[in-house]
Image: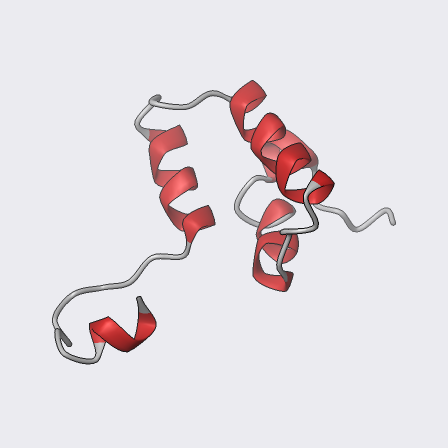
Length: 69
């Protein structure tokens, strides 16, 4: 996707967690589904650095700030 967007510079590329946050704001997904998605990503070894960081930034209301550990 990042390569494709080079051909369309006016299109903003969102990371998956950004889309998920927007869907939560729009009440399309709920906190339980977001927890399930994170659990699945972790279980499958697909949790990238950006998703790990977003867990405690974009989803602090669900997972907390992460500052305690």
